[in-house]
Image (tube, rainbow, N blue to C red; front, side):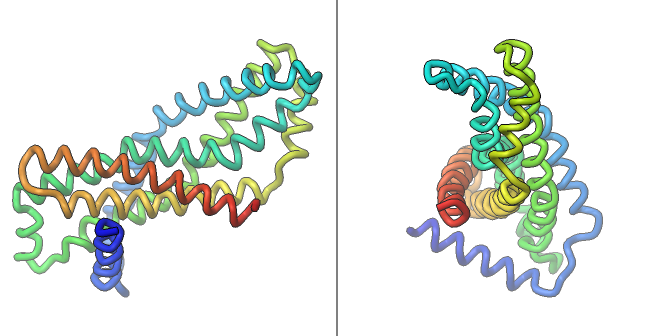
Length: 242
């Protein structure tokens, strides 16, 4: 509860510092590149293998029931609604979230945050705002990329390895989902991006000075962000599909 209260006040302080102020010029796209492009290789790799496993496990589950044709439906529902947004969030938290926390914690150790205050530059505006805008820009896109990569990998395994009919796979996948499911995944990505940014930057600002404090902030950022995203995913799914 103490953490949640401190995080809430951190968000309030950020809102006060950044009200009616534009983000630092030029830094938003730098952060978007650092968060999105640098997270893309690991996201694509994980999405491919999750997609292949979805097809394989779905096939093994439906074969005894004679429902091989349902693999496309299973992959589409699981991938679009749940797995792709969570995978994107987990990879970004592990890659970008830890970088946010460690960079800010190192700046605190080197007293660079104090230097910003001496120069009359609000640290919350300078350090949090571009990262927030950057992650909000790229997280929905990364979620969509994860969705289509997962579906493509599943389709390849289903048709080339398991011998299923590709047209039937796509038909069941299309009939089981709609544009609203894709939109829901994008909305989840947007929410997860905000959560990851605020949790990670807060961990950096709240860290103790020294190497140990940097390590603790980095570890806390990825753990808390991942748990928060999984928990929020359930709540959003309950609202959308409950």
